[in-house]
Length: 233
Image (cartoon, rainbow, N blue to C red; front, side, top):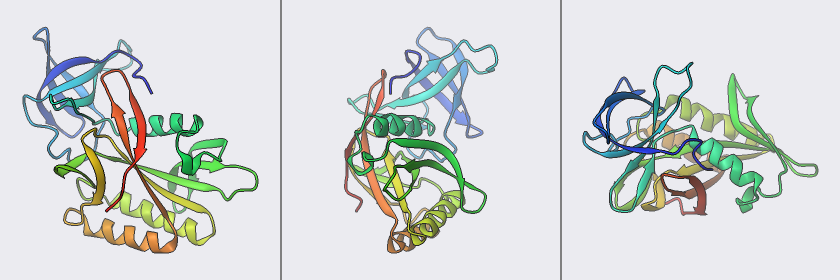
């Protein structure tokens, strides 16, 4: 999935109120950018970090830049926009690039299910059980090469895991899909110390038959693509 508008480099001044970030563009201008990430962004919001932002000229948008990437300046990137994994995974599924989901031709986003919930994707194919796919964006890494989820307490995420367990018990395919938005990680684990309730719900869901998939990504300032599967340790 290519970015709609070419990204431009900047330096982070500060992130605040979760969804706002003051940045300095290469021409010296200081502007406020939208940060599409409700998490803690642990390790990804230090002042002075090199970042990449997407400009827009939409008159309906007050903020003219959206923060998309952290550039670790060692050849690796982290995607911080939590809306991008859905777009990238949908493109990968439609292109048959996720073997575990390649048999499904119908991809329905944001379908109601469970108790006042919406599933990221409902996959359907005649002759196959419906597949309910919940996507999680993974950006935390506190140990070299290891990605972790979540980066903050997520009651909403715990609820979604429970809903998926319910669908599995009804005989549907239920899939937790972790997309690691970092190019420097080769494995994933749960951050139990950050949210033990989520880790407990994850274990219950797996016992109920929920499938767990984790894939890495290929990220550049031009695009983000779903990569290859990685182990969940």
